[in-house]
Image (cartoon, rainbow, N blue to C red; front, side, top):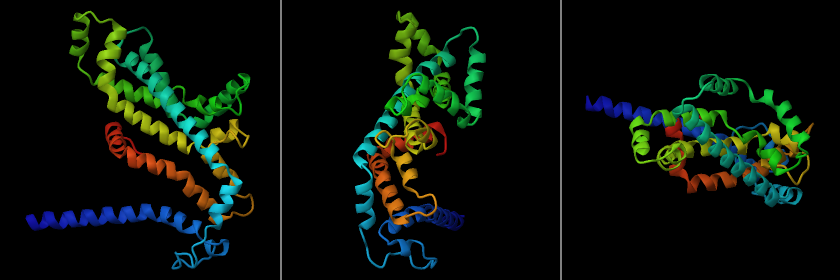
Length: 276
C-alpha cells in the first residue's frame, strides 16, 4: 500500500513537472528570441534554441523607439484606477445584493449576471460613445472607464457577504449600529480576502486589455503597454527580436509585483476558485 502511494506521488510530480515545462517554454522562447538576430529568430531548425551571439540590439532599438517610462506609468494608472473603482463599487453593490432586502433586488442582480454572460465586445460601442460624448478620448479616464463597475466583482463580493452569519448583523444592531456602520466596521473587514482576489483579477485583466486601449487612445503618449506592443508589430513582416524584447520589458513589472505579493496572489486565486 505504501509503495503504491509512493509510485502515485512520483507519477503526480512527473506530470506536474512536465506541465510546468510546457508552460515555461513560450516564456523561454521569448527571452532567447530577444537576444537573437532577425535571421536566427525566423529559422526553422527546432534544435537551435540559443542565439549564436547574445546581442542587445533589439533592446536598444525598442528603448529608442518606445518611451517605456511613459508606457509603464500609463499601465500603472490603468491598473490602479480599475482596481480602486472595481473594489469600491463591487463591495458596496455586493453588500446590497447579499444582505439587504429591497424591491427589485433579484431583477437587478439578474441584470448583473446577464452582463457576465455576454461578450465584453458588445459594450465597446456604447462605452466609446459615452467617453467620446464626455470629451475624454486619449485620457487616463478613458482607459479606466470600463472598469468603474465590475459585474464579476459584484457577484464575487455578494457570495462572500452571503457566507457570513446573520448573527453578526444582529449583534451590531443591538450595539446601536446603523446599516452604514454595520457594513463599514463589521461586514466589510470580513470580506478582505475576496477584495484581494478581486483586486488581483482586475489588475491582471487590465494589464492584458488590448482592444479597448486601441479604440479610445490613439496618441502614443496615452497608450498602455499592451497597445504599444500591438503597434510595433508590422503589417506584412515582424521584427521578432524587437517584439520579444519589448514584451520582455513589458512583463518585468508584473513579475516584480508577483514576487512581492506572491502569498496574496495565491490566496486570492484559492479564495475565488477562478482560473486566469
